Length: 161
Image (cartoon, rainbow, N blue to C red; front, side, top):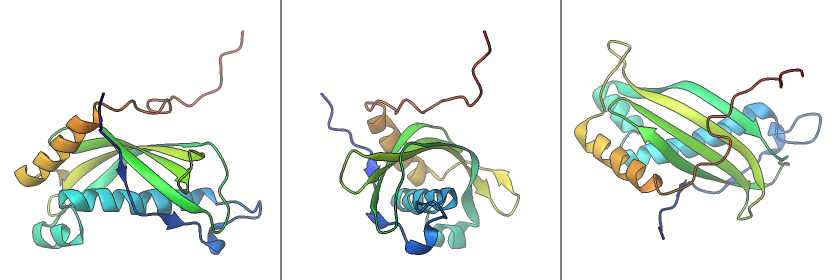
């Protein structure tokens, strides 16, 4: 049995101005909530604003895949859990699950690939050893977790018979 857990960011709240004419959270603002939670995670590795200022390096999003499951409304509390699927010297592949408050009500799943980038050259670059060590540690711990079924999901219409 494992006690490995996804990284859980601070509780967030769906803001009134983020709802659409259907009365629920607009798809653009799911990304805002996920991004805020990802920033929290990457800060724990040392990849925050100070890191960018000191090194002129950052990370860029290479690819995302969003699966919407249930609606959220203005005022709803949101909990985001992040699990690292894999990582190497330059990239981190992770998945985030958005839940309503402290419940198991799944609102959305976001799968992401990011890359470490040197802003001087605009090329990918290796993570510094101290940061890589923290990423590797969490990646190893998260190997014990089962990824959500949306990871690796391919979008498309079913083939006609």
